[in-house]
Image (tube, rainbow, N blue to C red; front, side):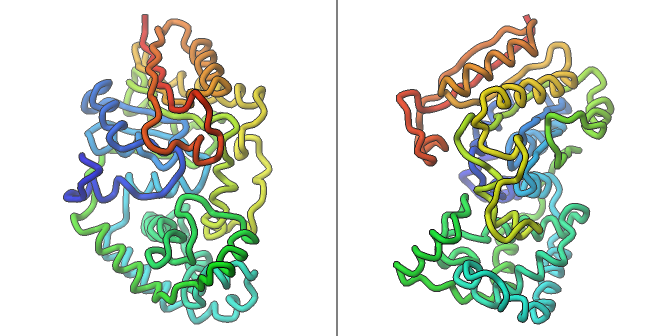
Length: 368
């Protein structure tokens, strides 16, 4: 699968979901090809938008993952099993028919929403927020994923006023910036907009994926579903643990996705999620405990000769503790470090944490 080309269904669905710290699809493909065979099982306890899982699932492997952020989970779950085009189109049109019921609610929304979205768009979004059962319905989850992709972004290509696609900025800052630059929300017919997006996404049909699943949960908790799935698909354990944990002190993935989380039923303004696993990971003790718990539980589902492949931040605050935890959890494994120098803009630079040690490190572990 070449993610730079869109001539297949697999390539068209690979890019679902703008998300910070996502694996490059080509990198995930290379790791899956090198370290696994068809029908092997891959696990990812920090799945994000599911790039590792999707690569495995489209290459005839079984993929099982965990993601704590609902935005990333929706992207990952949708890629692994999208809804049929006809039912997705029907649901979009149904939301369009419900827009009129939310005209009054539009008038009561905070100023940010009125400056961010045209009234028709905001009515459509309120209908989606109210009626899409994204946790339980494949069709509704697919619709929500496709709406979330273009909820905000470059002016004229997204449903919102001008705003970075991957990060929801603070409301007060956005309002001031729009006023200073004379930006008004684009007038968009949301149903027509979404139908055009669907036409492109489904142009080559649905991706062919193996039996795979991603769970919406905290990876530090023991999941009976994940355990039973691994036991059924790979009785001797998963063949590859392939992941990238959150980096220490870089960003708060939930806070930075606050507008998309609002569409999923969250609060109307950005706020802390009130959990040490949904923050910025600035406490070194809690950060180490997170990695230790997640890798321990994932390691319990790994085959005796399974491979561990972890991409992490090169900064000492992240890389040192990650390596120490991996050596503690997998004491019988050798560890190989591969430096991945800066190529383009990393998430550390995006968030103002540029250091002499920019780039990432791949930690590869195998049984001695």
